Each structure stands twice: as C-alpha cells, then as structure tokens.
Length: 483
Image 1 (cartoon, rainbow, N blue to C red):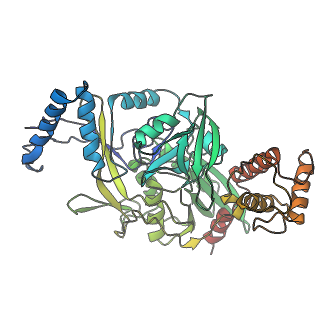
Image 2: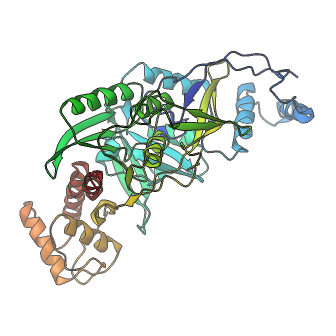
Image 3: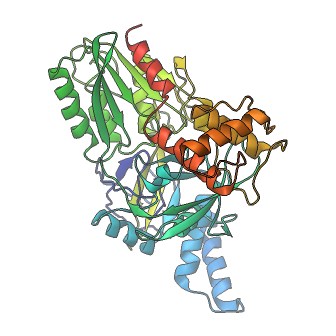
C-alpha cells in the first residue's frame, strides 16, 4: 500500500490564529493567518527519508471492511476515514496536532476573506479541558472579563466533556450580535460561574504605542497583542517613529499575546539581536539544531525591558526569552510554555492535518515547553485583577460569610472602598464600604450586596483592568528600564 506523492504548502507557524474555526494550536476564535514559509514535502512511502509502511497497516483496511460489511447500520466511508485520522492523531497525546475536515477548513477560508466575528479569545486543550490562553485586546471576551487559564466547562449549558477542541470551538463560534453563555472555572475560585458574551467583529490592530516620561526620560511602550501578517511592519514603523522622537528607553509588552506567525517575530527580533548570537534555534525530529541569525551590527543604544504574563505564549515567548538571554529584564509572571512548531498540511481534498514538526529553542539552546519563560523581575498585578464575577440570587448581608463576599471585598478595596477585611466575613465596615459604593453610583444604599450592586462592582473592576489602571507590572517594567 503506497501513499501517493503530494506537493503541499506548509504553513510554518507557532500558534496558528484561527477565527471561528478553532482547529489549530493556540486557536484564536477570531484572527486570520498567512503562511510564513512555503516548501514542498514528499509524502510517498518509497522516499528514502520516510520510514517504510508498517506491515500491520493492513489492519486498518481490515477494520474498515469489517465495519462496512457487518455493522448494524450504514456507515459513511468519509466518516470512517476521518475517524481513523483523528484516532491516529489522538494517540500522539499532543494538544497541538489535530485534523481539520473540509467543512472546518471551508469556514476558515471564508473567514480569511471576510471580517472576523466571534468572542475573540485564543483557546487550547490543556489536559481534557478547553482553556483560555488569552483574550484578544478590545474583544468581547476581554470586555466580559475572561482571563488566561480560565477553563471553559460548558457552552450554553452543554458540557464540553469528551469533545475535541474543534467540536468545542464550534459551539462557541457564531455570528456578530448573537450571544453565547460560557461556564467558567477559574483558579482560586471555589465555584464555576457563567459569563454571557455577545459576539462581535474582532479588532485586527495588533500594535499599540505611546511615549511616557520616567524620571524625565522619554520612554516608549510598544504593546503587541498577537503576531499576525502585518504585525512586524506595524511594530517596526512605530518603533522607528518613537526613535525619531528621541526615546531613551523602551518597554515591549507582550502580556496576553498568544503568539502567531514565526516569520513575524523573526522580523521583529532582527531589530534587536545582533549578528553575533542567534535569535532562535529550531530542532527537528532527529535532534538537529539550526540557529538563525540577523545581520544587525550592534544592539540598540537605549535600555529595554519586556513584559510577560501567563497569557504570553509561543511567538511571545520567542521574543521574551531572546531578549532575556541578551541581558534585558523580563518583568511579570511566568509565561504559558509552548515550545513547539506546527505545520498545516493539506491532504488534497480541502482537509488538513496540523502536525507538530519541530521544537524551537532559545538563543542559548533552552527549551521552555511546558515551563514558560521565567521573568527576571517577578511582579503580580493588584489582587482585584484576579477576582471573578459574583453571581447571586439572594442579597448578601452583614454577618454572612463565604467566597462571594471575599471576592466582593477584594474588588471594593481595589476600587478605593475600604471593606475593613478581605477574608469573606461581611462586617459592619464592609457594609459601610458597600453603602458608599452604592451612593457614589446612584444605587439604593442599603449596604447589602444585591445582584445589581454586584454587577456594577464587577463592571467597574473590568473597566479598570482594561484601561490599565493600577498596572503594577507596567510600572515595574518602566522602572526596570533604567535600573
């Protein structure tokens, strides 16, 4: 039995960002991608570089015929074939390798050619649970308060247990203006909670820049939200503009950036990593390591720090670890930990296998997979950044206790209202803080936490986070630039 020769285009990517399809590693629920490199692959069984077809491959054909001829009900050939492919991939136990059938790829291609709609969150299967890698900046997911490492348990009340990543994402995707309800489990929160999200068009801008003053020095901030087709061009243009404006230091912010195209982060690193050290190494399945170099003569004359968090993955980690090994400070929390490279291989019938082909290593040859990049300066955000929505039916009142009250107390403290304590006991001082919040926001000032009060507290917290208020990580990164 021979596999026919196919000349196929490879999408050389790290975390292919998919809009409403959800079949690729680090799957983005609204984002387009393009190939970063193209090459021809020989998939023939008689190629010297390929192993011979195993003798027991006939078992697959025997199983196929057995089912077709004897199963109680009629079975579609396509169903059996695609089930066999999915079964082989599942044995790899690799969350980044998967099969996308023709219908899934059709929807993906349709999305590439049109505007992007969805909730705007990159997801991945971690163990058996669909997990948020990072929400897209200014997306419905971010506005609803979803965060890295949130686990999606249910979609519109239906459990995702036992479903593949593609099947799970299919339940989440949908048209602009429609609503989806996700049941979320968050680390540190005892009970799952529900989040209603109205799908919308997803922002495609990927680079944001501004200049601020630190001890009188003009300091540039470049925030990169993902690595898509135009990101390197946008980044380099905005960096040059800031350099022309005379910046004396720079912060590169890749927090919540789930990755993207390999060639894009390469083009960005070529602006910083000089020719005497590689900016990246790639190791193939035989252990052969290939270093990649820029033609840059020397480092930037100004100091730089990089911001990361648990939502920084893949291409973000390539950038962060390269800058770290050059001697720059990396500030924040340990990153996600994705150190493999996938290639999407069309199978000739509009379906595709996305398979892990290689691993990427840091300039010094370190592999951060499942470990992440360790910051040189660890810094968390204020406690209220890590709180969760509080869903209540009956009002919470004085002398009650529980995690919901503790959550509200932390939020109130973050918003400037002193609850007296944050241990979950509804004290008289907590009631005073609730009453003050209600008075400031034209609510009935009972001092009790009813549903309306809880929702408004939650909204205020989400707005603070989205606007970057009390951003201790950024403040630390700005200080570290000149340390």
